[in-house]
Structure formats: C-alpha cells, structure tokens
Length: 243
Image 1 (cartoon, helix red, strand yellow):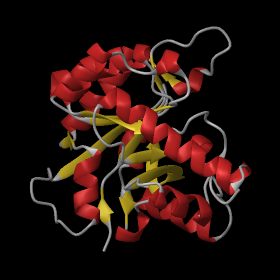
Image 2 (tube, one colour):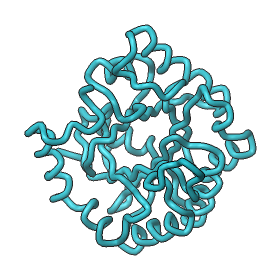
Image 3 (cartoon, helix red, strand yellow):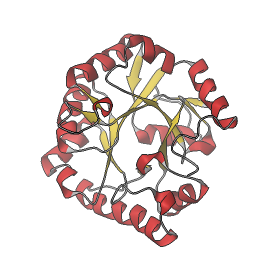
Image 4 (cartoon, helix red, strand yellow):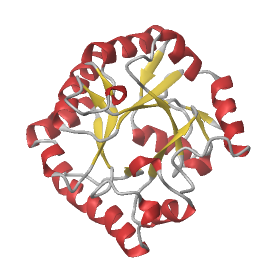
C-alpha cells in the first residue's frame, strides 16, 4: 500500500538575478497563486515529521484528506521571507533544505524563531552541494554528518531530513544517509505516492513559474505518478539517481 502525499519541489521564491536560472525562481505572487490552487482543490499542508509517522505505520490520524508537503531546495533567507509569509497566512508547514557550508544562506536566529512558529522545518542539503555519487565514502559521510551538526546548532533541534544535491543518489547514498541519522531523503524523481520502503528516495513534483492549475491537477493525479514509475522501470527516466 502506498501513501498519497504530493511533495512539491520549489527552489527559489523570488525574482531571478542576473545569470540565475529563471525556471528555478517562482515569484512570490505566483507562489501564492499555486498555494491558492491547492487550497481550492481541498489540499492542506503537512510537515515532514507527519510523513515519517505515516511511513512508519503510524497511520493517517490527523492527516487531511488531501495532504501536501511544501519543500524548498537551496533554501536561503531571501526565499524564506517570501515563502514563510504565504505559508503563515494559510497555517501551512513545510521544509527548507539548506547548504550548511554556506553561512550566507543560513536562516538568521529571528528567522529560526519564525520558522518554528509556522512549523517550517530545517533540513540538510549537505555541506557543499556536491554530488554525493561522485565522492569517496569518507567525503560523502562528512557531507552528511557535518551538515547535520552545523544545522542543528542553528536550528536547536535534530536535523532529520535530507535533500540529495542535484537529486543524485543510489543505494550507497541512501544507506549512508540512514546511517548518518536522517529519517527521510527526497529525490528529484517524479511522483506523488510513496511506499514505506521509500523513506530515502521520496518522490516530488517540480514547481516552476509556468506551473498553472492545469499542470498542477495533472501532477496531483495517479496517472502522472504511474507514468513516471513506468518510465523509470523502462530506463527512460533516470532523473538524478543512479549516477
């Protein structure tokens, strides 16, 4: 039995600067519009710890009928300010994955207090955002462990959730993440459903500036999920993993 929980994958909430990828930047207005579409469709936000409880067999007690988890890769203070304002208006939690070795992107202490109030959790995007699949076992472990330690000092609570840099992972990286103390890891594999065994290869939905109501409805459907599972089994979609 699989768990239906779309995990939306954002990167930057804000306007792109010179030389930055436009498709990774969703404007604050567009972000609000996308959240409104979800709300109109009956979706309600849940946090990553709710996902963990469900995957561990804790059931769906307290889950909304249509749950959704907002995730933010390459999180930084600027994107947080825009995202938190919109999420707070709707009382929706979420998670931001931070590159721990880049102090300029880490949340300030004031932002940490706001994160806690909203229910927005800090996760790890490793120390230097290097592909774990290209590192030695020792270097990979340092990326996973050192980022947890540094982020825990800032957050004041255990860092339990990981986003693989570039979505690159295999069984080796998943096992190392578990051994390093994480409870979940998100990939860039497409899909909206998860098995209990998928805690370290969670699927997500790509959110872009052009993600409108039509696209979002498709992404939320079962057919879209099965399409991407089939592509992976046929070797037609090796997005991020197995590198």
